[in-house]
Length: 116
Image (tube, rainbow, N blue to C red; front, side):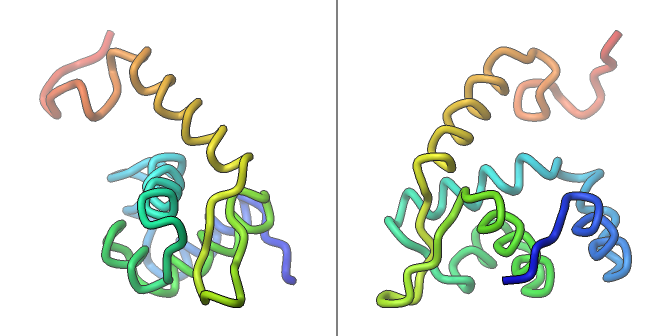
């Protein structure tokens, strides 16, 4: 398995012309969406992830590789699907708590609001 650190993944995103991803949606938000999808379906294919998070396959593969490396997801060869690990479930729980606590979260504030 090839290991990819966060900086390398970001570099790949820039090379692929996807720098806008980090401005439109945060890296952690995309990871949370993938984990939600994996939990919702109790195992998810790359195709389903692609349609859920609306990103190109090249980017999805890098995210999935990174998440496997961080032990947030495991690949089930028998069902050809990605499943959330306990660490992934913990990440998702903490991410949800964090977004609830932060009043300046994108999901709470209107885009035109200024944050002091």
